[in-house]
Length: 596
Image 1 (cartoon, one colour):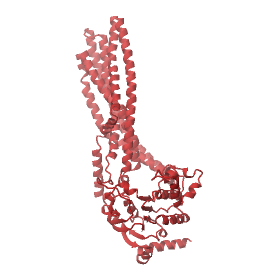
Image 2: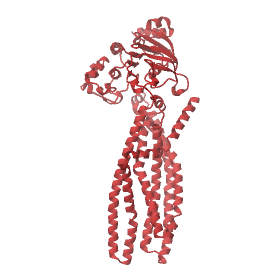
Image 3: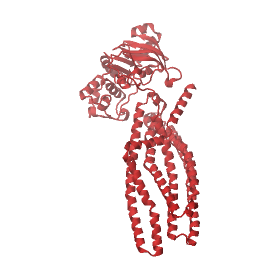
Image 4: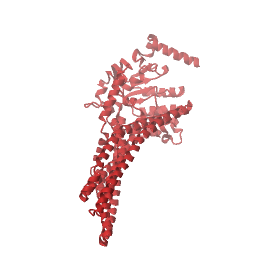
């Protein structure tokens, strides 16, 4: 309960800090200086050209009524000239606004990706992949649309509104005052709807994220779904999320079905006021027909921005909710960072010490590791053995600082891991994780992932050491063979050997092998193990293996149980003195003999 409370408080603080995300997103425009101002300069010119049109229309009507052809020709030419002016600058405005908005989206996506890459494992443990994906795609796009369209529309609406009010009062004060009462009513109405819609837009994005998460998980696990014939159940799960999303969007649409009819009703009331007051003025000859028509057109200019506000509010509500979600990630606290005075870890010999290390996920709950203490001398091979959940993987996750110990400390050559830079630490550790991850691209690119400038000779040498060279050459394209998404075009054993080659290419001083032979047959395992025996010489190696046969030759074996080291020693000593190790050994040997 306490852990959950702490987590909720942290999330609330992060959300509070990320408020005002729309303003922060707009500030990205300042990265482009004069370019960012161009669409607004063009907007002002185009809008002023638009505002002048009703005045020239009024002149045309008066010219027709008064039968003055010269004035008629001049007014028509004026309308033509202003139309060209408005068209040219409207195009320039739209072009530069789109260019600026795309640039902001580009920056936001890059910042998001960079932040996600630097966030610690603990953050990814708490957040789903689908949630992060929707923020980097759909949320960024909604912010981009507002910056490229909505923000300009808002500025344009303000210019038209202010300019029109000034012209109305300059033309006829009594007519202007007849429509003024509707403005505060409209503004209050829009403020109310804006406040109501913003949290509803945020809820839509959350529902969409949940939908995207189900989609991403199902696409990634499509083979498992088909193998267990769970297509119908997963379809029902997706439909439930889709229903939630649709219901929330309908609730939001219902809100705006009230807004737009109210806006049109207010506009019609203003038109009625103009017809009544203007008609009386024409009857008593205090207003010409041309002036009345001019006033009526300006009245439309008065209500046009008010009606535009409905669309702007919709766009702003979406963009504001999305911007807050984007900056939740950009403001997220990273649990694993370099200290301000962190030093670069020098080339190490590989002497590793765990000193009373205790670890809890998210800083609370039962410890996964409890006061673990051991030393791996430079060049030693340390095997970690124990049941699932005993803490083996946690130990190797602490070594490259994927997590930090809750208590105690870990040192390499006497350097506390928290006192050195992450890059200098991880560059000296080679890792082959239990879950093999390859990337779309060639086999060569995957082996050279940690060292892109590696020569072909170096790549082939690593592949030979990992017993991968022969099967790679069996493909028509050899090292240029394309690897499908997550390495789907390779077998489990082939992926494992490519991953081992990738780690070995770095020539690390410390080597971590997390059950690295789990996906291969016994013959391949023996070949890989013989290569690893040579390659681990001179390196401090940590090996996790389910099969006891792969750890029997280790310099030191750690037997773990429920997060504690219950025995340390060589195979012969543990077999004689530790009942847990003896039980594991006996059960595996007997099961192997029985299988034969």
